[in-house]
Length: 175
Image 1: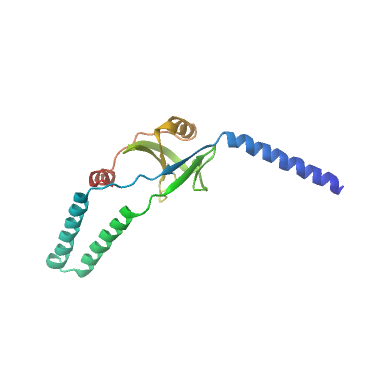
Image 2: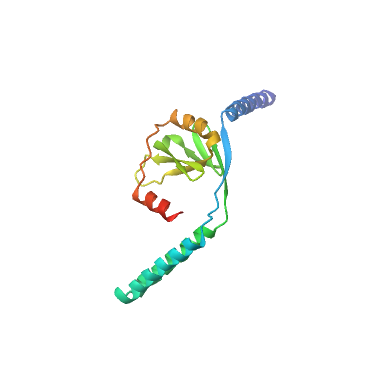
């Protein structure tokens, strides 16, 4: 009796392993290394002058040391963000989920996606169904773009990308 149960469990685990092996063939995975920010010295000078003016306005015109402190913190945070080391991110997509660094995101939790080009790589943004959820951003190179877009388009609709004010501002600033 015990031998029959163990054989049955073995057959089940073998079937699951075969099913997993077949599904692994349907996975698309890649690594993406964030591009390095090669900003010119003039960019740093312009941003520094901008924040110095903001701090001076806060102190002398608004008479608010709190606002001046907030501007200094924002400036320092921006510098830390720009100087952070490049991160290598592992992406994988299968029939049901997108994995970013081994964290799963169910595709059916997103209502549509958009594609846009950013410098020398592409970005897919998956827009969530839930109102206060954040979008999921997938970075990729052109060589896997067609297959990636086709896989996502089979599950959720592709909509045209509309650049927002913030997107436009970030592009003009050079981030």
